[in-house]
Length: 157
Image (cartoon, rainbow, N blue to C red; front, side, top):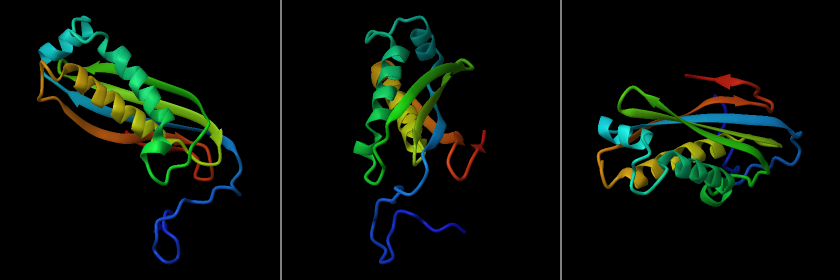
């Protein structure tokens, strides 16, 4: 089993030293799902939410969140992100799949940035629609693909 990397020999929290790692192209994609009532999804898709363009605002929130990940996750390295995309896809009549992809050229991966983007985008959808549907559920946040670095390609559904 691989050792945990964010602890020193004494068991104290420590930031991983990535200074000796080579810079490589890296990318990560994360997904989340938000489930809601069918009428809530119809409202979003028709552009009828009183707060405005739900997916447009959530996309900007996800992008901003990816760029601020190191400010939110204590031992996360600040990275020079080169691209972020956040996409939304209706899944059936009561769910939305949110996919966030983050890219960089650096010494460490962008999995945390992709996860942060997807989760904040989902939270923004919730915030913009909670006045009509407080029962929405955010679930299944996960990394679905990661590339670059020593460990190479990782994929899961």
